[in-house]
Amino acid sequence: MGRPAQDITESELAVLRVLWERRSATIRLLTDTLYPGGSAAQYATVQKLLERMEAKGYVRRDRSLFVHQFEPALERDELIGRRLRALAETLCDGSMTPLMTHLARAQRLTDEERAALHALIEGEGDTTPGSQSKPK
Image (cartoon, rainbow, N blue to C red; front, side, top):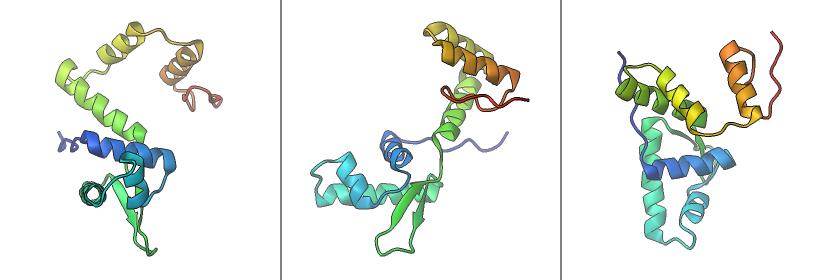
Protein backbone atom coordinates (compact mmCIF):
# COMPACT_ATOMS: atom_id res chain seq x y z
CA MET A 1 0.00 0.00 0.00
CA GLY A 2 1.27 3.50 -0.88
CA ARG A 3 2.12 6.24 1.54
CA PRO A 4 -1.06 7.86 2.91
CA ALA A 5 -1.73 11.41 1.75
CA GLN A 6 -0.98 14.10 4.30
CA ASP A 7 -4.18 15.29 5.85
CA ILE A 8 -5.26 18.88 5.47
CA THR A 9 -5.72 21.10 8.50
CA GLU A 10 -8.83 23.24 8.93
CA SER A 11 -6.77 26.37 8.19
CA GLU A 12 -5.42 24.85 4.98
CA LEU A 13 -8.94 23.82 3.99
CA ALA A 14 -10.15 27.39 4.52
CA VAL A 15 -7.42 28.64 2.16
CA LEU A 16 -8.27 25.98 -0.42
CA ARG A 17 -11.97 26.90 -0.30
CA VAL A 18 -11.10 30.49 -1.22
CA LEU A 19 -8.76 29.34 -3.98
CA TRP A 20 -11.33 26.87 -5.36
CA GLU A 21 -13.83 29.70 -5.59
CA ARG A 22 -11.49 32.37 -6.97
CA ARG A 23 -9.03 30.05 -8.84
CA SER A 24 -6.14 32.43 -7.98
CA ALA A 25 -5.32 34.87 -5.17
CA THR A 26 -2.53 36.86 -3.56
CA ILE A 27 -1.55 36.56 0.09
CA ARG A 28 -3.24 39.91 0.73
CA LEU A 29 -6.52 38.82 -0.86
CA LEU A 30 -6.49 35.54 1.08
CA THR A 31 -5.72 37.37 4.34
CA ASP A 32 -8.49 39.91 3.74
CA THR A 33 -10.96 37.13 2.92
CA LEU A 34 -10.04 34.88 5.84
CA TYR A 35 -9.41 37.65 8.40
CA PRO A 36 -11.40 40.78 7.46
CA GLY A 37 -9.48 43.75 8.81
CA GLY A 38 -6.56 41.43 9.53
CA SER A 39 -3.30 42.57 11.04
CA ALA A 40 0.30 42.12 9.92
CA ALA A 41 0.49 39.05 12.15
CA GLN A 42 -2.44 37.44 10.33
CA TYR A 43 -0.82 38.28 6.97
CA ALA A 44 2.35 36.51 8.18
CA THR A 45 0.25 33.55 9.32
CA VAL A 46 -1.34 33.17 5.88
CA GLN A 47 2.06 33.57 4.22
CA LYS A 48 3.56 30.78 6.36
CA LEU A 49 0.49 28.61 5.79
CA LEU A 50 0.85 29.01 2.01
CA GLU A 51 4.54 28.09 2.21
CA ARG A 52 3.65 24.85 4.03
CA MET A 53 0.82 24.13 1.58
CA GLU A 54 3.14 24.67 -1.38
CA ALA A 55 5.65 22.24 0.15
CA LYS A 56 2.86 19.66 0.58
CA GLY A 57 1.74 20.16 -3.03
CA TYR A 58 -1.67 21.65 -2.19
CA VAL A 59 -1.06 25.02 -3.90
CA ARG A 60 1.08 26.36 -6.74
CA ARG A 61 2.75 29.76 -6.70
CA ASP A 62 3.21 31.97 -9.77
CA ARG A 63 6.42 33.88 -9.11
CA SER A 64 6.46 35.57 -12.53
CA LEU A 65 4.62 38.63 -11.21
CA PHE A 66 5.83 41.13 -8.62
CA VAL A 67 2.99 40.03 -6.33
CA HIS A 68 2.91 36.23 -6.21
CA GLN A 69 -0.33 34.53 -7.13
CA PHE A 70 -1.44 31.24 -5.59
CA GLU A 71 -3.75 28.67 -7.14
CA PRO A 72 -5.00 25.30 -5.95
CA ALA A 73 -2.88 22.31 -6.94
CA LEU A 74 -5.36 20.00 -5.21
CA GLU A 75 -8.91 20.11 -6.54
CA ARG A 76 -11.98 19.61 -4.36
CA ASP A 77 -12.91 16.29 -6.04
CA GLU A 78 -9.43 14.90 -5.43
CA LEU A 79 -9.59 15.85 -1.74
CA ILE A 80 -13.05 14.31 -1.40
CA GLY A 81 -11.75 11.10 -2.98
CA ARG A 82 -8.73 10.97 -0.68
CA ARG A 83 -10.81 11.50 2.42
CA LEU A 84 -13.47 8.98 1.41
CA ARG A 85 -10.83 6.34 0.60
CA ALA A 86 -9.15 6.93 3.97
CA LEU A 87 -12.51 6.68 5.73
CA ALA A 88 -13.34 3.47 3.86
CA GLU A 89 -9.97 2.01 4.86
CA THR A 90 -10.47 2.96 8.49
CA LEU A 91 -14.12 2.01 8.96
CA CYS A 92 -15.00 -0.47 6.20
CA ASP A 93 -11.88 -2.53 5.48
CA GLY A 94 -11.43 -0.57 2.25
CA SER A 95 -14.93 -1.06 0.85
CA MET A 96 -16.74 2.05 -0.37
CA THR A 97 -20.12 0.27 -0.51
CA PRO A 98 -21.09 0.83 3.17
CA LEU A 99 -20.22 4.54 2.86
CA MET A 100 -22.23 5.00 -0.32
CA THR A 101 -25.16 3.02 1.06
CA HIS A 102 -25.20 5.07 4.24
CA LEU A 103 -25.07 8.38 2.36
CA ALA A 104 -27.87 7.34 0.01
CA ARG A 105 -30.08 6.24 2.90
CA ALA A 106 -29.18 8.92 5.45
CA GLN A 107 -30.40 11.91 3.49
CA ARG A 108 -33.11 12.45 0.99
CA LEU A 109 -31.69 12.67 -2.52
CA THR A 110 -33.23 14.87 -5.19
CA ASP A 111 -34.29 13.33 -8.50
CA GLU A 112 -31.29 15.02 -10.12
CA GLU A 113 -28.90 13.54 -7.53
CA ARG A 114 -30.43 10.07 -8.00
CA ALA A 115 -30.01 10.39 -11.78
CA ALA A 116 -26.37 11.44 -11.34
CA LEU A 117 -25.73 8.46 -9.05
CA HIS A 118 -27.40 6.09 -11.49
CA ALA A 119 -25.31 7.49 -14.36
CA LEU A 120 -22.16 7.08 -12.27
CA ILE A 121 -22.99 3.45 -11.49
CA GLU A 122 -23.77 2.77 -15.14
CA GLY A 123 -20.54 4.50 -16.19
CA GLU A 124 -22.19 7.23 -18.25
CA GLY A 125 -20.19 10.45 -18.82
CA ASP A 126 -20.31 13.47 -16.52
CA THR A 127 -22.33 12.77 -13.37
CA THR A 128 -22.22 16.22 -11.84
CA PRO A 129 -25.76 17.23 -10.85
CA GLY A 130 -26.99 19.82 -13.34
CA SER A 131 -24.93 18.47 -16.23
CA GLN A 132 -26.10 16.35 -19.11
CA SER A 133 -24.70 12.82 -19.33
CA LYS A 134 -22.74 12.06 -22.46
CA PRO A 135 -24.12 9.19 -24.52
CA LYS A 136 -22.10 5.98 -24.71
